[in-house]
Length: 146
Image 1 (tube, rainbow, N blue to C red):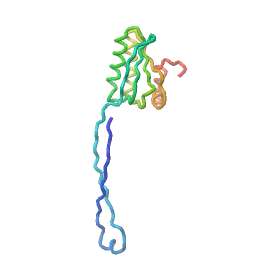
Image 2 (cartoon, helix red, strand yellow):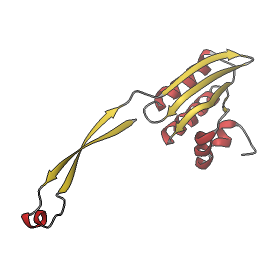
Image 3 (spheres, rainbow, N blue to C red):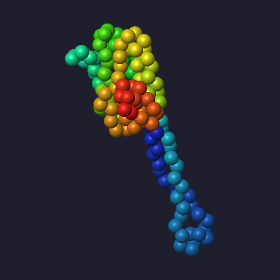
């Protein structure tokens, strides 16, 4: 994710002598210097196998910068625990974009192709709304009511 930081410093431009004589304030011109910085990925995960499933708990933002890693984490969790379904806990996901959605759909397809299962659980807030608007929530959660 990129952050754009704007910093400003006012520089005064003198007006014509007649404006100053009329009691007007000199005009100010503001210049902005832009600095673009890349921030580190904002997504973390925790994998735990218990109670007949593998739970991958995600925390943070799911975007282009972490999409490939997310796909790897999910398919890796399924590969490390063959035969156990993968539940992706989305409770602490604060942001998801189309790259993140694509990573989830690809991971589900790859895990399903090897005979496993993958579904989203505890999806809420903005992440839930984005997945619903994109029309993939029911597919990814296994919830036919959606």
